[in-house]
Image (cartoon, rainbow, N blue to C red; front, top):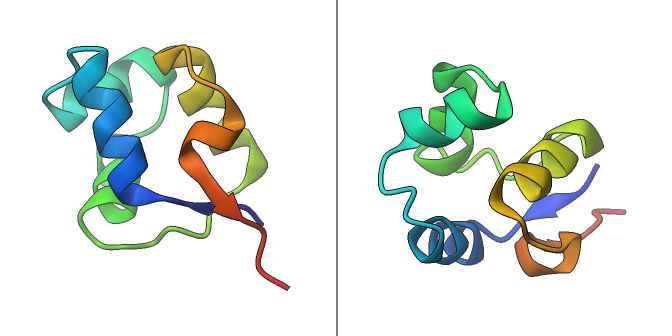
Amino acid sequence: MPRLDLSALERVMRRRNFLFKHQLANLVGISYDRLTAIIAGGENDVDEEIVARLCNGLGCAREDIVTGDPP
C-alpha cells in the first residue's frame, strides 16, 4: 500500500484552493469520514485507488503526495 505524505497532500490541497476536507471528499468520491481518518487521524497507508482519486481530483502527480510504499 502506498504511504501518503500528509503535509504534501495538504500543500497541494491549499494550492488548488481546497481548504476544507468535505470539498475534496465530494470531488474525489471518498467519504468524509475516511478522508478525515487519513488527514487528521494519520492513517497514511492507503489503497492505490485512493491515491489515484486524490491525484485525479487535485490534478497532481502520484509522486507529489506519496512518500513511498511500505515493505
